[in-house]
Length: 86
Image: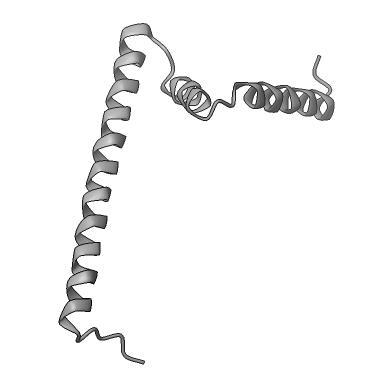
């Protein structure tokens, strides 16, 4: 099975789409790098764990604080019941 595109108009459409995708990837990489830098700055300046900063930022972004708390309580309850911890 061959996947050749020989029509010049179609080729240009595909090339343009690939160029656009590549630009999007570059922006995503830059944003990820910025997020990483911000997290590092917060961790250094306030002596906060990076993992916790990331979790708070994600909860804030997704507006999922209530779910995070419920999941944490569920985890705590299950852990304590399985391991007989009080």
